[in-house]
Length: 297
Image (cartoon, rainbow, N blue to C red; front, side):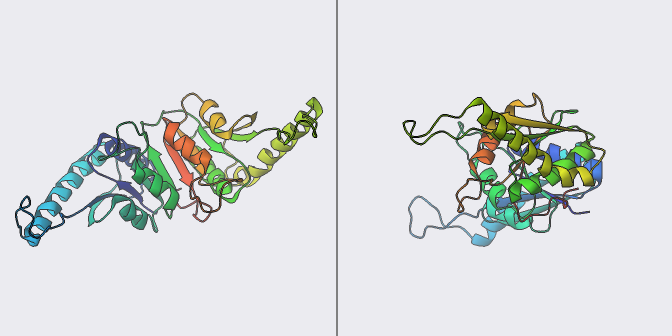
């Protein structure tokens, strides 16, 4: 059983993430590893405002503070039902530490915004970086999951979407939840209305049929692997981000690929995954094309 890695920084958002991950650990027996990254003070020789200090004493003081923070988080995890808890304090940046820790993990979990973020931001920089670079499925938790809610997954036929679909099926089976698969489509707008005809009702029907086929075909492997999962196919004429957020009132989890069709090759997170991460209140899982979606099962 591969483990779950959770980023901890003492913030309310991190505690919510710990509780979510601990409940998952208790349900499937996966070990839980709490990771906290901290930076040592940088000496400024000759500055009249910074008294000279002993670097060894600084390192010991900061290390003890980090461990105390981790111990508090571990107590929360045990209280929330984690099967097995370990802690790890590392020096350096939080995002880099969690991305490194995600190598070989089944899941990496972060809160939506930790200490040091701007109050108006719903998702902090650590959440964005971990979602885009993690070497396993990444989950961002803003609020506790809704018990009994469905799992919602975005489908567009891309490689990251394929990984997201397989992960979503496994999660729906684990939670004994329904799966709602959303594929959004739209009619192409004419480049020059004077030269090109506007789409007709017949055009709309053709696009709707093609979109439904894309959705149905994309779910075939997941259905084969997880035949007990009840699936609802939602082919919607709208922006995919809106469809994912509106298709269910209280989903247990929303799953998206890191970058779908139409994105720029250099972007690790596409517009849809970024929009959902910033606006969803339920936990959101992000999968890259090169991660194994079955690691987390």
